[in-house]
Image (cartoon, rainbow, N blue to C red):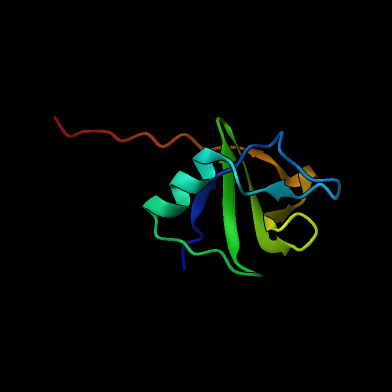
Length: 86
């Protein structure tokens, strides 16, 4: 199964270091891919040239969805190069 890739603002973390999934880019990606968030769901989160895998949780304190990530595992996003045949 392919893990969905969703935009996240890496500067929008809560006090526990979880990424908040409430910015416009995230909402647009979720809508475009028809993703309904649920606890325990796996996502690949990206921002510009960075990406990281995360697990979705609902923050009862803030009443919004967040993603638990390991900040030490943030990686450079792989560039996809499509080569045409000539």
